[in-house]
Picture 1 (cartoon, rainbow, N blue to C red):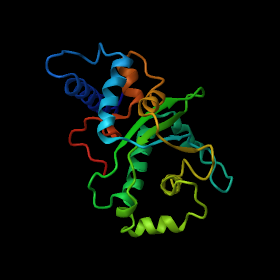
Picture 2 (spheres, helix red, strand yellow):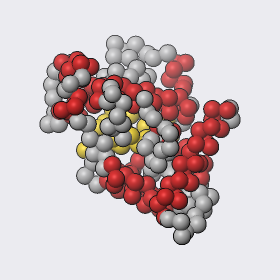
Picture 3 (tube, rainbow, N blue to C red):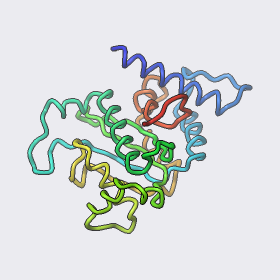
Picture 4 (cartoon, rainbow, N blue to C red):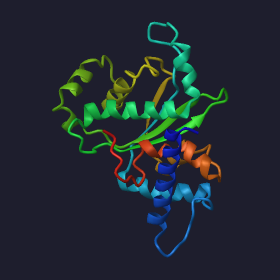
Length: 223
């Protein structure tokens, strides 16, 4: 494992330890080694309640550009690389913040999860807090995005998020690449995003992208 990988594991372990200590209190001693999936989900759920994400997004990274030409295999082979997927998460955060939070106030909260497919490629689930239209309307980039939306669903906010994320070269126009759903059962959404987590610390760190999520972050800004 390279230095970057070691730093990510160390950072993830620290946040996992913080999650435990801040959630269960000083009177209980609980180490990441002994934590189970059920306990972890309960603790993460308590944190999510404080920010109340309203969207669950799933991204299956495409192998085709919008013009039906194939994306370079050098890029698509990276879909098996967890560090590449995490960098993509960072890119998505930056794209959304450019539109919704250009003043870097931390308006949006993100919670990213990795899932490995049968072919060993990764795809992404993430939870996102509500996107403020009134604040975004003051942003020129937001108005530019709005002009690109030709047809809208029953939720204009979903259409805007969809339009922004599809600018990512590994998402593109394909309907199977991106799915955005309103959350009506927050615990159920969290359970789905973490369905591949086992009672194993390393597995937890692989599934939950702590470095790009707002779980008990310390000096970790998304912009």
